[in-house]
Image (cartoon, rainbow, N blue to C red; front, side, top):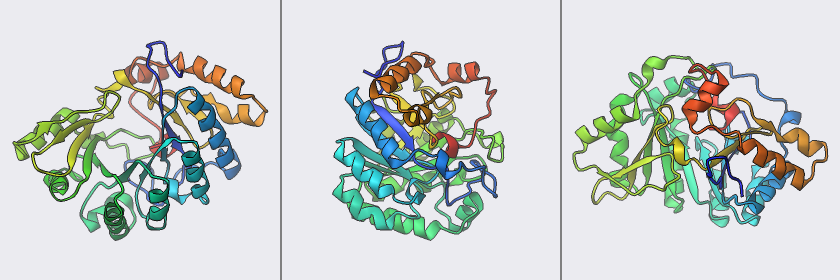
Length: 325
């Protein structure tokens, strides 16, 4: 089993297939982008599938493809079909701009979850936040995914003075669509504009929701989930709050992360990872891989606050595209 010293079993891999993205969200990276990894430094799909195959034998059940924008990497269909063949539960996080041609494939391989990143419902504001004029594509493809019966969630990074006036507009989507809307605490990324004045805590988000929606009720949440979930009676969707920065749900974490360059991270806040690409390309056996992975998991901190302290991050983090969003 993929266990750490706190007896937490790790059944969920967040697999970043690329660090490249077709948006330039202000809180994530500068307008010119970041220093993207050369292609030869990225894991190949064959290498990714070898790793997921090894991990599955030791308890992995769920894989979420992230990025960057996972659908922007050429040939990602190969990876998706390979994961389906392995019998893993497949999930994706995407900005949905490139989604339309993949909807049929997602139905065929029974994608279990599609998280769409969307921070505003206003086209002009979308352009300001992302530095790209792609709201119409995102919204059209989100609706197409719902129409196709795919299980859709919206991830909204909730920011003071940026989009916090849209709280009710986002929440009311769950009145009209069978969709979950999750409000995520902003994190201070080195590659973003670094403005932490935008931060709104999960507790504040909850208070605002409760003031706007007095019928809001706590809903059952998976023990390992990073989300506090709520519903409004008779609304088909749900509302979630993700305390990404306040980290109140770290204790039950079952996640590991793999960067596009093949570095395994045992925490979002970890900086000292295990480089698996070099082991793969040096001819390491499956036994070598699982031994080193389990040894590395043994170093996992009790929570994100402790991981940040050990890493000496002092509240500043790399772009999410290099970690896996």
